[in-house]
Length: 399
Image (spheres, rainbow, N blue to C red):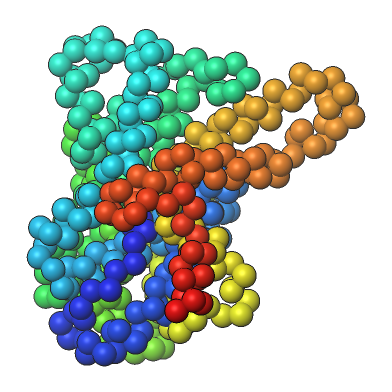
């Protein structure tokens, strides 16, 4: 989920000049994948169509791209320095969300008595600072009539599982990279083996809070490791015909398992971790196998360069706030039913999700303007309101 583009020195085993030549093209391709993944997440959370994660498994792609960037950084810097840098870029936007969200929950009556013992409430509250486990939230909160729907805190906290999973992957990456270099195949497939062990009852998840981290690793760990393997050049050593031959078969197995275990609207890949792990792994493997090196944006994509740049520059902000934007947009749109003229003559429009999607992106744009600057502060950059690359392009023209 990282939104930064680094220019680290070449990792060991790859000629420095080769890395410098291919990195810009690879970054553009990865920027496109990240932008598509982020857009699909927002689209899916509004529409709820079960087939969207099959069309494009966004979470697996986002973990793979983050793993690739992590391996690139670890190739040229000390592990502790890299981990500290990743956490510095990730956590401040979360803290801003928590400062606003937790304050709102407390104003609506959430407090130390809600978890049975004040000590537990205060302890769990620290997960808003360092999300080693899911940050807590108040359940059953009333909304603001006509503006924010009920139980808004659950929608606010919904995307935070990704932040928690990302943090654990970052902390484990130095060890994963060592294992990957020593035993590439075993390391890559180990999360899928773990997912199978959980799915078929060979292992059980202990406790209540931390098993979620194990589930995330077993479901998406292979995607993260594939991203690292791509950066390390491990995937490039596989004969070119292997991936196109094997990946579709794995995709079919993942889909077969999903459909044989109740895949439908309301019970999609997210609810079938083993199927998710297989399908995401194989799809990511194909996308990384393609991995074109673009020296510049292809002509068909050039018109989308600025939106893609903006989505990448504000990926954390968009991901953290999009659920709440969907809730607000849906609540405001539903309020239009109280206008008799609209309800009588334009019910078809009020029932359509497409205007709501436009409204959602307008609210997301407002969040980018209001909160996106925190990503620049976290990255120690000059804060910008709308970092779509336009200013950089203008400066390049005047050089």
